[in-house]
Image (cartoon, rainbow, N blue to C red; front, side, top):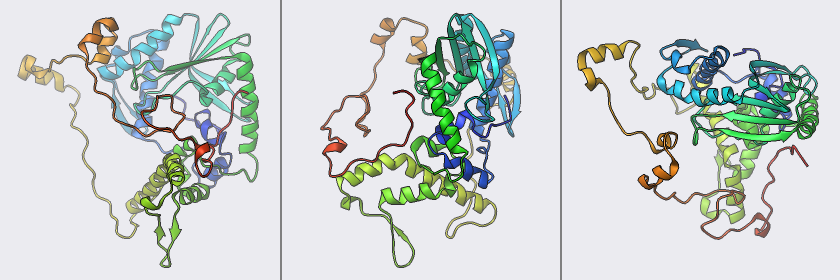
Length: 389
């Protein structure tokens, strides 16, 4: 995996295309990239195994037991990781065509000085397929209107200038049903998006670019803890006020109007993002010997125990078959091995608990719906850019 990062990185496109001022703010703080984490390092490790499999046509299970240190974190490929990687690898192989792995892309035509690396690009007929592995097990990533993949698609056009159809594919094996997500755009749609990106890149590198808080904008921004716009947005939406002693007060929940509650719920992801930044800053200062008043750092809960390399052989020698557990596979795993109409009668699933979501959620309501238009004041408009008219 490449270690260099572009100033306007495709992976951070959700941020700089919507909050142009974030680039200058991050640079002023020396935060040109997010600090490494165990999650990102694990993704890098999984990417490297996947790339080797695609390049050498080997099976991911051949890498079981392989250990590697990434960004200071040590990982060993196990059977679960290999089995998660295999479906995406097999899918790319079954497409046929001309497969390119870890493709370095020149994006300068749309993003001055821009570049990136696509996990895989497949050329078949008049179709260009851009494939990206997301090994995280958190929120599923959608390929539809995915800025990062569409920017990769623009760069990949150089490999197939006559492509008429561009397929954007997310391989995310550890979320949902493990099939990931796919979306298709035409060449004309992709080039129209390129004009939007070019304008956004110009705005992001212009003096005085504004800071525009937003859910996707702030989630992974390394400078959110120092962002005055996010702090002001959080205080405004929560109705925070200061008292005579300089303490911050929030209104009583019972005193909020329905519209005020609606606004706060809409702003919840941003408010949580700001609180996470406050926590991270306080922890960093405490570790540096300057804890905030009334707080201290302690050793957290230890991680789960795990076997060291070679433990299996020793345990089998001592315990024999008792060293292993045998249990029924999950319904999700069975779906991949047997027809669903065979599995369905054998499965039970409890009803979902009531969940509060925005009115534009596609699931049917189980209660009364009141739109923003019928409230006492309009709901805040989400910040974003439109790809297509």
